[in-house]
Length: 295
Image (cartoon, rainbow, N blue to C red; front, side):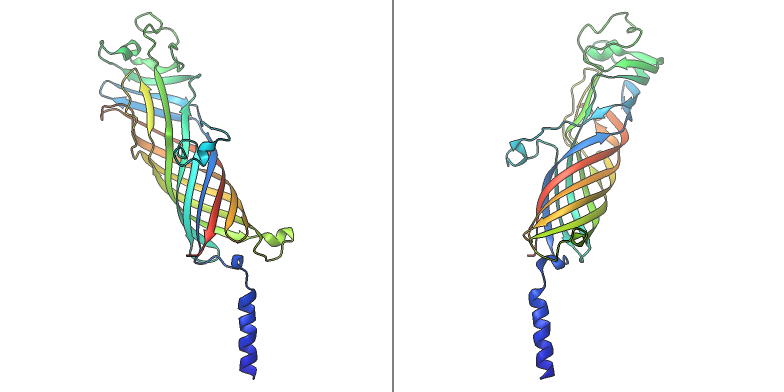
């Protein structure tokens, strides 16, 4: 009789256990958008006939705002987006892979100091910028199209052929492909919510590491751009966020994510001799929607 009673009690406990009470064994997938901020960066450009560094380059993101492209399958990769899928190895920890599609655009309307040398053949449009290391010794350069080097060019003329000194961006994009380990904690009780499956509130924190796979669009001294995907470096990141899960299977998540990017092998022109390198810190604000389920 006692065995039967204990067995019946155990079955009742299992029957009332909520779906959201345990995460182990669940999969999740999410899609969202981001806004990005970047620190200033020293960017080195080097090739057969030049080697110079643009100091403290300013850059910004390229938001699309509220747009149908975020959910249009044909154009979903055009805006700044975030994709992630993962698995809970226990109730509190998950492992995931993701793609942070950021956009990095050099601020064109800026003057930056340049150090190095440029010695292009005279028949190239960019040769108007030729100068040795004594000329480009922390020299201010106007990066706007048709801009000028402070003090004029060696040839004593302003930019006659409209060749911009530099246009530089990772807009398709600054792709951070990464793996994350995250912790998740149910804080529903902080808000007086019972353990129910209709609404659950979670805190999440995580760290990540990955590679940078940008498609860099660079117009450098009038040379033809490379403009193709290329593994260029690595990134490290950390994040914190809040997750609202509704009706067991659906969630809305907001995250703050920061990290460090180091790219020492950026393709800039059609010549494999031409490279760029830079490192900087980034900060993302992310809103994503997703689903969580057991297979």
